[in-house]
Image 1 (cartoon, helix red, strand yellow):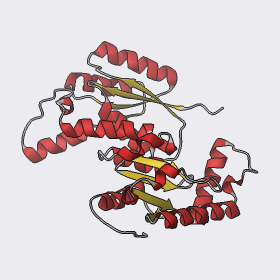
Image 2: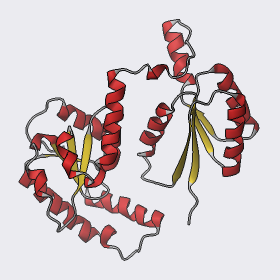
Image 3: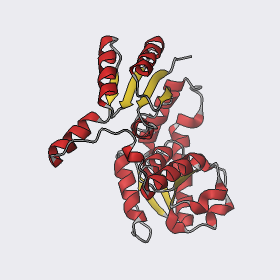
Length: 274
């Protein structure tokens, strides 16, 4: 079994910024071979030295959001000393804002947690996306601002994660060939639903890569072009029956598709095909 890449998320506050940035970036890779270790409220050199030791033992990389200058400089020195791959998520942005504003930063950890309503809304949306992923909770679909429907590997989950980080409650529901969708969906407002489709050849590439990565049985119909076309045609018939907007994700980055969805949520009416 392939060993997972070890990632240490280190913060002198709760670490939510590092976690969200990392998880959002990870959606671009369609992999799950990363193991995350969170280290929160790290403020002393001894704590940093302990993390560095563990990182060396696990051959881990470090992503950090440390505002306290003394702690940040010590961590930078240690990762250089022990040749640990690392990424500072805060410093460059703080320096840019300092240059633009002409003001010195307060260098106080947790400033982003002098929390406002928007923060709580975003955290609630992230929790909702996790709980509602892949049709897990039909009972909560009425709470969703948008419900994404599509066959496997049409970017349903990455889009929900991205939208959640924009404070949008997004759920997704899988379309499986030959399995009738739950009647509950027909009772929900159609304006909340968006169908996701993709070109068959593109989907074949994505699924074939997934089979290769995870060593799935090659005989699986999951990556057979005839089965893929059948699935997509089945999904299209359901979208037409529901009368919902359909977006083709074949040539779009996650951000592009998400921005289209956001525009629709903000007031585009009627049924559209992109």
